[in-house]
Image (cartoon, chains in turn red, green):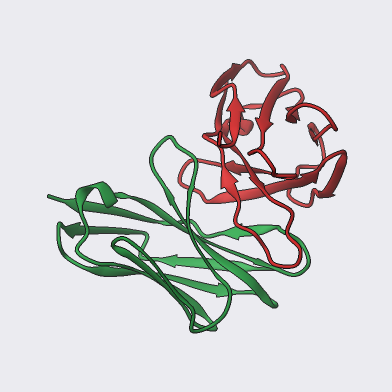
Length: 116
Length: 110
């Protein structure tokens, strides 16, 4: 059973370019979460998605960031016009449907974004 | 807003020297508390979920316990391969939004 897959593992972008990060959840998982981890800081929740729906985006910056989880294909975290402060590790996690108890989230290996 | 505080920030142990990591939390209605292990350059690896005060779970040299205000991760006779950052996280309310602590960086010296 393949785990959560993320690509690319490393991404270098110049200021002003766009970054697209992809996440394929574990088989059977329908919930996807994105987190950002800055050096020496904890994981910060960004957004929670189900297929074709954004459930909670309270952790997403209001501008330049967007996320989707289409009916077919991976979840995408998109960062437009990147700035140096966007440099971080971005982790995706997935979980099975959680009715009624919360299920643990399984994390991918992360995408390390460097903005030059 | 949920809050998670982990202590100590860093811990250095000799191989075989048992110890405990602390996770204090403030939530409005705990639904679950999670422990993860994170190695450098990798994603967090799930260890345990605890749901209610008094609950305990074990895995090899690790044992997690939960009270109404905090959780402990006990490490018995640690080995160098237990060196990692251990993360505590909580979820509350109706969503799966998880709040993480900043972790305890454990180093086990041979």
